Amino acid sequence: MKKNIGLLLIWTSLLISQKDGLGQQMSLHSQFQMNEYLVNPAVAGYDGYSKLNLSAREQWLGIPQSPKTHSVSFQTRLLQSSYINRSKSVNKNSDSKSKLSRVGLGAMVLDDRTGPIARTGIQLTYAYHIPLQTSQLSFGVSAEGYQFRLRKEDITLYDEDDPYFMNYDFGSFIPDANFGAYYLASNYNFGFSIYNLFQAGMKIGHNGNTDYRALRHYYLTGGYKYDISRNFYLYGYALLKSTNKFKSMQADLSVTGFIYENYWLGLAYRTENTLIIKAGFKVNNFYFGYAYDQSFNSISNYTYGSHEITATLKFGSSARRYKWLNHDMY
Image (cartoon, rainbow, N blue to C red; front, side, top):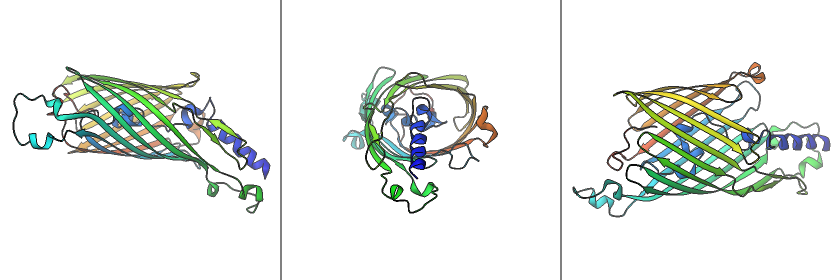
């Protein structure tokens, strides 16, 4: 049985190693544009909306115990105490941006599973937004904590009553922090963020003799909106991610077409030969998006691809607060 536990630890180390850490330590998504808060804490409350986001991803469908990621997040921008009273009257000399506080808040609960390995945690965010003449600069910090564990119910044993297994410590709580910066203008944006700032360690085993350390992750994003006509525009988006070892880099490049801002269809390419098709629609303040990933490598022979569903509900209106924000890019 000790041999089986040893193999399990080897599997764990491979999942969080330098080579595979980029894809396994941090959850993978294909619709970051619908919720950039997943990769940048500075986004919390950046556009004046309050948003509730739900996301579910089933990766490599057809492979037993393949990766699954589910998240719920909420972001908001604090209003000044005088906003409600002033909204009842018209003040021609007031600045629309002054009605909104510079503080944004966010929270997220995430559950990420790969085989018998699970990571469940929460993230709390404070963001500060600096309005400029025709743009905005934002900074954000997050405190997070998650439980990293090996799920006993997903492990098949030769001996169910093995004392070594019964006395094994299969969980470890890991606290850490994240930082991000985000710049938003009328037709473009870019951001930079760092996750796992402290590179917290995790111990697995009843003797605490196995110590792994989370890798620091870097994200660089950029988006550009190009108007084709009054009712149609293209939105290009790029995401570059890497660990602190700078040997595991991955890029997502996408172009999405929007019709009347109510319907969209996009195509993306992820390095390591993955093609992504995205589509969605908007009804009032509700946004629904779907993404399908198809890998063109050895794993494609064993899977039906990856599927991701994202739903967003927005509250409030940002048009009166940001006159220079012409389009609703999600």
